Each structure stands twice: as C-alpha cells, then as structure tokens.
Length: 186
Image 1 (cartoon, one colour):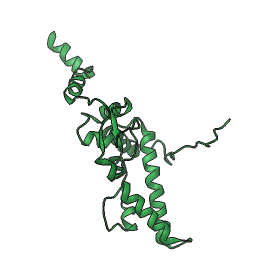
Image 2 (cartoon, rainbow, N blue to C red; image 1 turned 135 degrees about the vertical axis):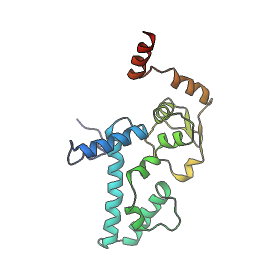
Image 3 (cartoon, helix red, strand yellow; image 1 turned 180 degrees about the horizontal axis):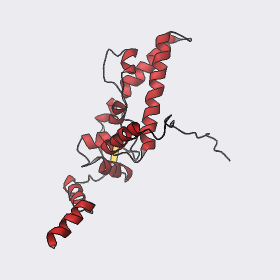
C-alpha cells in the first residue's frame, strides 16, 4: 500500500558502493558537517546533480522556453546557493557538495556559534530551540535561503552557550582517554 503522495527515495546510491576513496571522502564530509549518515550526503549530491543537469541542458540549447527555464534556475540558485548578482549558468556548474552542505540549517547554526559542535547544533534544532522568522524549524537539513539567514534566532527561551559547553565537557570520555586515565592511576 502506498501513500497518496507517492513518496519516493530522495537520493541516488553511488554507482560503486564499496569504492575506498569515495568512502573516505564521504566519511570525512559526514564527520565535518555532523551529518546523521551517508544518506544525508547522498541527498545533497542528488540535489547538486539535478542542478548541474538542468544547467547543462540549458547550455546545450535544447527544449522549449529556454529563457524562462534559465531564469527560474538562476533565481533558485541565487536564493539558496550562490550569493552573486551577476550569476550565470556556468557558475552553477562550478557548485560543489560543500557549497550545498554549508546552506543547511545545522551548519549555519554551528557557524553562527549557536551550537558548539555540528552534532550539538543538530540536537538543538531537533529539540525545537531554533526559529526562522518567529516560526519553529526542527529539520536540520532545511536549506536556508540568504534572506532567511538574518531572521534566524532562538525559539522561546534561549539556550545558554555556557550550558552547552559544560554538557560537551561532561560527556563520556573517549576510549583512549579512559585507558590513559587508568594508566595514570596505576
């Protein structure tokens, strides 16, 4: 039984699932941006792939209403991904996955120092402490437009950074730290 919305997978799997270099690069990006799993990275790559595909189609000159389609694509990219006035379709082809990941709500919260780490920023968002233009947003993968970035703030009572830093320092120590403390005590 399916939903009336016809929900589908929002990402494409990599062609070679067990490619060692790709796995290392993706693992590094997942750790750097505090993503939940590889699937979130694959979603960003799929969005980027679709943007590039549309740009290549427009550059080839095939299809109807080229100017209208080009204007829609450029407007979308100006709103979310590239903050330039004189944006061209060729600039869209130069986008990278990191450009897309930088526009996620989770990353923007972290970069604005509302969260100490990317993972903590994710938790702050999921727990409903962040609002954009006075409305609560609880989706870490929300793509923030450039106009919404200035409207980003705490929802309700702000969470103190000192409390967050204390929470990070009191988390369970890493395995190496436990082993080192046991060696010192002996």
